[in-house]
Image (cartoon, rainbow, N blue to C red; front, side, top):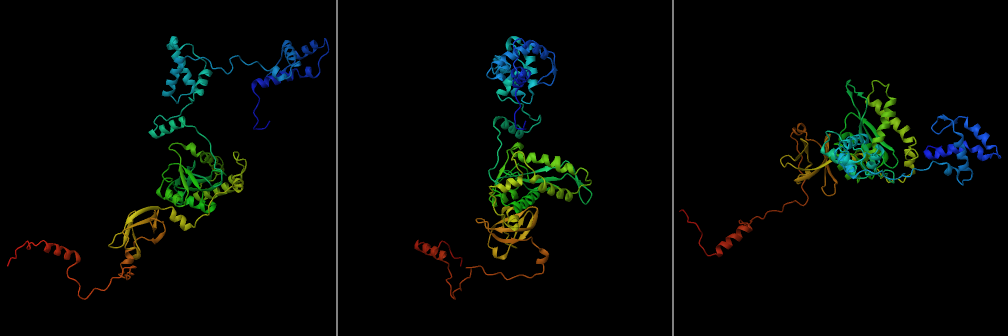
Length: 481
């Protein structure tokens, strides 16, 4: 029997056993008067029952089976045990007891079916006239399942967000999904290892594994271990995955600080990658990634159990070998082939990866700064950056930077996002030599020559003086002398 075939039901197995018992009688019908001796011989032998036990079968039982199957068009149907007359029918359960069960479930959704049943038994014993006869455990369980009253796990000290997530999981249906094209959707997440690594200073750390999986092919696009979970490490991993596989169309991630960092979200937006985050406290939405961590712990880390001490470099090298040579090439039961074969089959909707400098500039925060006119600098995360003199007329500038690398930043056009200049931190010691460049003239900013005999009064003053004279009133002041 193959793994995918369903075993026969209990009624079917019993009918097959009965047919096997009388099979010789059907294949070689006894002559007149010879049936009795053959039934006596069959009644004294031991038979292997469907449940595995050995037992004798009475003579009258074998005879009854024989006559049922002899003239039947379908012997298995004739030998099958008759169904109960109430099969498929709902046992009667008092409306008052069902209402009490509903209230009990609302108040205690985390209870097991057995605990619900035991409490109903106690309730019926308290007020038998009100709730009537207590049904069986199977009846109570079936009634609860028919109404979707399943066990609902909620932490005792759950936060409001956790409670909302649990209620949403109960009220809304859950469906599995899969992208129809390779690199249409990437999953990524961090995972804390079950063992520690040692650094060069002899200190121990729990490493964090960052991994990106393709939804369609289950291909491990990139995997790497870091000492911490932060936006810098996440961007470092995403950039490598893009360089190796190309630009995906979308991503799915949880709501961690690194995933929701400004640099991460801005980079995905600039690269035209749709960012999708799971609902709070709903890890099942990223189930493919969560399943992958089981293989990381059960196979990868299990094979490194005797590597002691284990360094981060050793762990990363072994991880790359395992991911590329085993995981990506091993048959995946859900897709029926290896991830790399599924990737090669396509269709593939990945786009060409940009240059490394463009990737680094994309995964940067985008903020507005005011240029200080006194020295032509702007402040970024407490660090002063010098602006080029050709941009000295800009009051407000849009700057791109990464918080973990303030050795550089970019001034970009606010509309087109084109790079206007790459700026560096202010070097006061270098500026202390006193040498300065002559400012280049600004385009269309040359002043005309002033006339030799200019008008002493400007236009507005001339206008006011004319209007004042037109009133005919004398000047409203008295000369002192």
